[in-house]
Length: 108
Image 1 (spheres, rainbow, N blue to C red):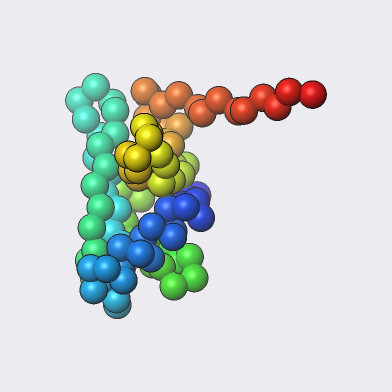
Image 2 (cartoon, rainbow, N blue to C red):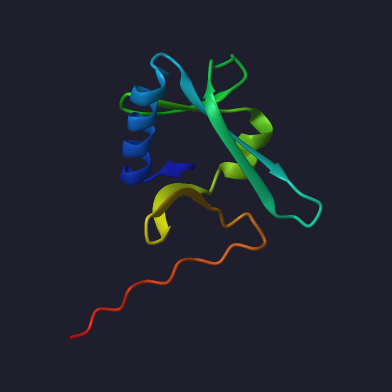
């Protein structure tokens, strides 16, 4: 099942408020490239009857059926990749180039 982190949800809410996207869903698209990797895109859109819908409180995510299949095990997050550089990322085990994040090891 597609999941989304609290950090990503908060950023989506802020973007909706800043862009005037109230009443629209966030459409997430995914397509498979020739090498098997997955490319992602997103933007605000109206949902269609064929879409898969995932609601997180006041945020609705929609995906067309092919994207839904590619995203079914993915997690969307909003992270700082480098100092001051925040981005949405997709952690997707269906992507052959996926590397699971390393767990922080706490010192005893």
